Image 1 (cartoon, rainbow over the protein chains, first blue to last red):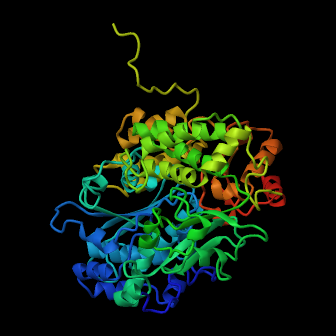
Image 2 (tube, helix red, strand yellow; image 1 turned 90 degrees about the horizontal axis):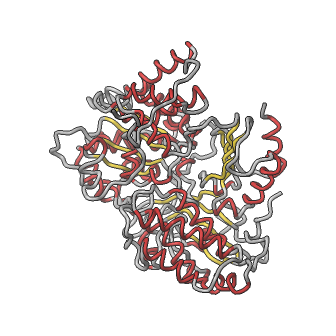
Image 3 (cartoon, rainbow over the protein chains, first blue to last red; image 1 turned 90 degrees about the vertical axis):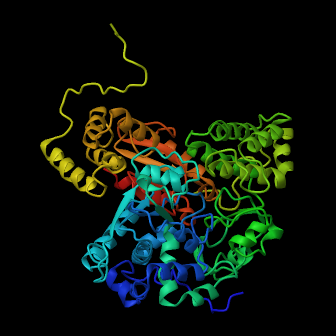
Length: 444
Length: 176
């Protein structure tokens, strides 16, 4: 249980004037964490991160300190840090606010991580659509060079670190860590087989750590306030706070920083956060961690938004993308939108995903348009199972987890709303007519 | 004698005019040098994505001659440049309209009326999603990380969010 009183860490300065500049960041105590970390040995830094219980914020929730410790100490090859800012999972929009409002917090994390890992070159990979965010990050990097944080010496210490922003060009798959590395190497984003893991064979065949933007922005707090304090903010197995992204049919969507023991109900209904649904509407389903996460039903929302707790419900806290659908939302049309995304974004490398994702999309379109036939639901279920059976999560027949991501929504929608799919087929139409999108679906 | 080319080769058709104006050439050369300095000397090909982006910034799209040029500067075959260019949706292998309009229709945006917004835009621009004219290319795109400020779209990579009809009309009115 939490032993430290909650306070926002990552989002504390958002919305304040010039929060993205080095001056403002320093006024708030910025780069003090780096100063403290530089008094430790690299091994001690990694140990502190381990003790803090910081877990990756990109989706998988892997313990960050443990990931760092996989980098071989005695390798003669150069080591790299790749920052994953490819934020593309539908429902996820947190990293962009870090980059817009407080890029130095991430840069400080980069400096600490690089020193701990013996990294002298860091690439910040941002999705291609983040033009403004890339400009902000680049401006912050220039400030960090000018202030002697990056460059030949780090805060006067004999340690060189160069940091570059690389923009992707519109491919969800490049958020998968090995596809990201391929893309950084100037190739199309085809994921690699694991093992070997990037910590051993990563960018240019060299040991590489891939960390999410929010993960790195969390790192300085471990050192300014201490690993025990940071761990105390969270639950037994996850330290700190996290950003969650609330969207869909709620009165106040947005990014909120929450203690890890906060529940989905609090996020959706609390006055501090989502402020509930429009009058007269009830929750029908909630996507808990980006569109690939199996849905939760209204009676399952008293679960903490923390990796282990969500896992118990056979779904995942993932990237923190929480999407709410009200009781007048068509589940077939919603799933079709989700399926279409994965069909569009499948990289085409593995057959089950390349062929299965468009197949799912075609069947769903057919059912939604009232052309469904008896047996279609079974075929849909079979196709999803051929890409990745469920439960549990992680049985996919593909190289990377995009296959799982594409099949899980289908499985979970069918498990919970099979009747609605069958009603479409029986009535030869969508029961929601031309209003399939709930309370806010009308646009004007 | 072999008269047909082997399958899978990509040969850029010759262009009537030079690819770059002298100023463009200067900018390209300077920026390519800067980009290449970010990578190990024996990994020039890693610069493919930024190099293609640079080309597209200068020309508005990726003309075949340009792909050839990028490939030669990076020490790879034109096929490699084409392979990468055709994988990522933000690269234009055909000349698009002056304004590329990417409308998100993914779940969070759809729950805030993105389908209706797209229909309105199709009518307004006289184009179906996926079509182009001289002035506009209209596309449905996937999640743009604006789910809390839905619906959203990008025009030539400039981001617009929390859109209603009045706001959208005002944005399009400002386009030259």
